Length: 275
Image (cartoon, one colour):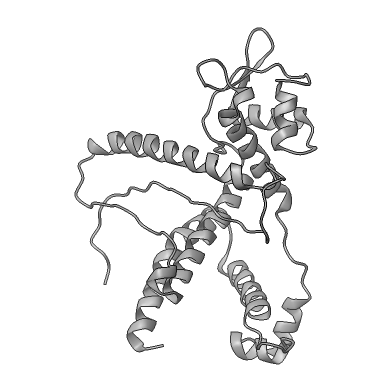
């Protein structure tokens, strides 16, 4: 790594850590706790991804790669692996149910909008919707979750009505911190891929931004970007659903892969960059 590259990487790390440290401090996570988590991740990534081909990754090699002592590497290797499966599954179930409700013909009304559904029933009901897109999860549990989020409501005749176009957690820090971990990880992984790959293999990564906008322009741009982005995501969701074997088990092909696209909005007061 050249000095200029090292300097640029160090600056990038400082920049991306600032909003993360802001979240950590706001939630009472000290530097010591963060440092312990960072050491665990260093050891985990070095152990899993930086082994010499055909050889077992040793404690000594991980220590060399990470700069930690052999004793510390061994201690960190013996710690239980953190899991967030329950949060991830709840997020995916809710998102799939809402997306399926929006696009599947049998759950739409005559105008092509998500139809109000009776809670139970075999044909066109909320229970059958959940069976299609959330496996064996009890329909009542999914309904409670969507009601908690304000994504659905029960109307006077007892049917359930969809009131949002997408799954966006409005309450619960656990769900939002899950999104922080997954979405930022995907973005950094894409950037890492693009840094290491040639142009022909680069993954799509773009943004548009201007830095001299008046306050009055921001509400209009928020709405414009939200409307355009949601329409695009719904179009891509429909395509992905047709090729996903959880939704359509008969889809041919080999391997199992995760793919998608994320869109986010940002704004902040302009400040001269610190040197």
